[in-house]
Amino acid sequence: MRTFMLSLAMLGIASMPVAAQSIGGTYTVAGTNFDGSKYGGEATITLTSDTTCTIHWETGGSTSDGICMRNDNAFSAGYAMGKEVGLVVYKIEKDGSLHGLWTIAGQNGNGTEVLTPK
Image (cartoon, rainbow, N blue to C red):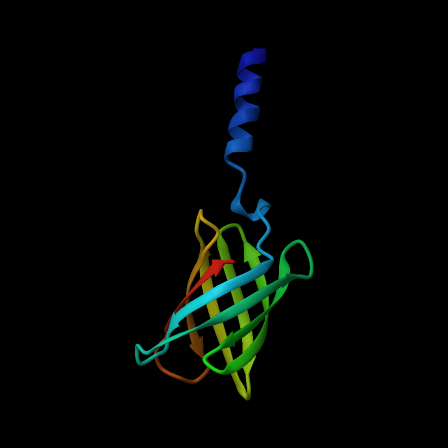
């Protein structure tokens, strides 16, 4: 019985959600715009609670700021860039990188973005 309980405990540790890892920090940004053109830059994620954060991007000569949230291996952010409002949804990969799609309110299409921890 003790061996069985120990096995269950170890299984529980091995299957802990990705959310246990910290997502705060600085990332290298590599993305594509709606038209397929590429951009790069840097993003900084600052934790504000166990599940929420702020994010700041400096890409392609512009800056934007947003509020973000993590749920297991999903990470999303709403952001403002000038007068435009957008949304980005990422999947958190095992290596800590975030792979996502973004869009801007009222516009057709989407861009892609990968955040790689520095």
